[in-house]
Image 1 (cartoon, rainbow, N blue to C red):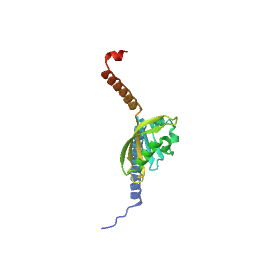
Image 2: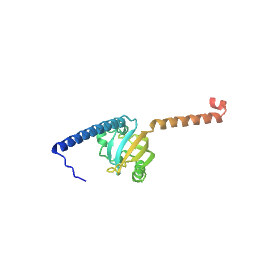
Image 3: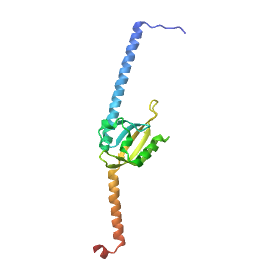
Image 4: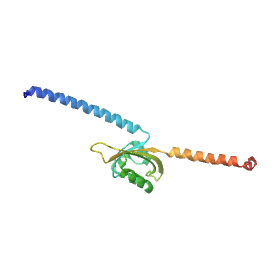
Length: 171
């Protein structure tokens, strides 16, 4: 097979074409990143990216709101700072498991001391350079728990009404 040599002009033209392709790819990546960031920031759920040790690498505004902590204070901190002891043990088990996906109900503690029940969904990142990182989505269950309590109280009241005569109820 004969060896073809390219002139400097041909090499310069190829180089320029490659630069244009690279620029287009970078612009596309920036657009995708912006769209993804917009999606994550507009979610009603809290979103976090953690190391396997629980250090927060990235978070959205909703989780900062739930934890009543400025976003810049979350980045680089350990998620354990916002977890009651029983939830710390559960999250540690999640992070140490071999599961690529896992879901648990646990509590988080806001900086003002309030406890928030959440449904936590974990997905392990399977990118070549991020194998020890996980994404967490925290769904606030506060309203659902409040409704469950109201429904349980109504159910107890109805059971009482059914099991007691009307005369007794009126007294």
